[in-house]
Length: 475
Image 1 (cartoon, rainbow, N blue to C red):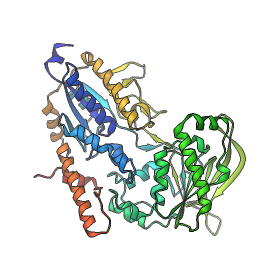
Image 2: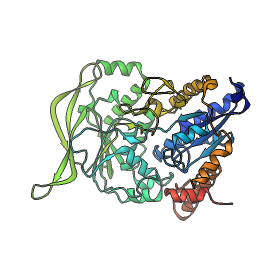
Image 3: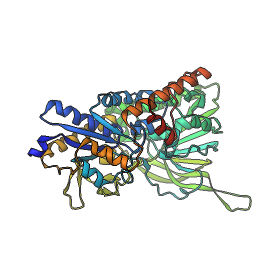
Image 4: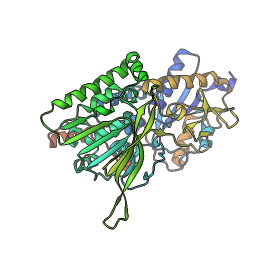
């Protein structure tokens, strides 16, 4: 390790204050206690509030998953990581700015866009990406406050956890969401929705679904919503039977679905809303509506599927049979895709920063000194929070092993980045600012509880300007 590196802490910028970014910061901060190392860590986020996907990508009625925030909160509360919110890398600060002020830069920007779907009719009015809808109901500050909820029948394409979240929020009685941190504009929108039937479509069978038992069970917690299944969808081949025998999670989900299929025959009353689960359906076309003169309306009027069958290996093949469903809205929940970071090598096919074990690679496969990636922007939008921790550990181990080869920052003083942000008029927020916003949202929830009949823990602030104003308010 060179004399210059030992004479001061290694300056590290982590871009993205979601779980991946906080875990990476935590690993570095704790490494100081275990090894003869010193780090000075700054965590940047383009949003005024921290926690990324947990705040803006998890359905509001997931209190147990939201509990992850408490663990992240403890990390940031220690005070050994500085937070700079409301700072956009690319406009407020460039990559060159970061390289001039930090010895290493770690990208943990996640994935917030929908995977594009090549499907006729996908451009019609009423066809939506699930990621956009999730951002709306989670109060993302960069999304419109209104959402067109005009459909009585809705299709959700996908068999992952996001598809279940979208379908559950669409079908759930809005009053049942008041106990969450749901923003007021989202409640008002959902309360006005005329929805009666929400259909979830997956292309494979019940033994091949991608959601988790917890997500599946939560569907049955919705009041006045019937779950509807179809006996012809319960097809199992040799690979399915083997998966059920060898995997307890798959066995649990298949048993849950089979029990629901039996229980629906015993219903004596019909709920006001229905949530339909369909399997072995491959989308073929989103159908455009026609006016009285036979002209296209430009709006969704239905969706066409090809009936699939299992091929013995757990995969599916088409049967040549087609079925149309009348719907007025289609939500595509087939996955997330990472966004390119200007100036950083990017794999446009996979939607990730080009890397090996977290070390960013140039087009020739060489490590770009001092640059790293972790989380979904490193490996793609797969895996749970536990994977994110392991992912961050791998990347930070690489950074630590490279420490004596890191390019030295030109302006490593901790105050230098503050001076740069101030000189550019950037209204950045801090951890202390988040604590103010947190207290403000809790107070809004308390006030709402006193004026209504539902106990509300908090009410999320949506407008970016309001978030910044509260966070930067002088005592």
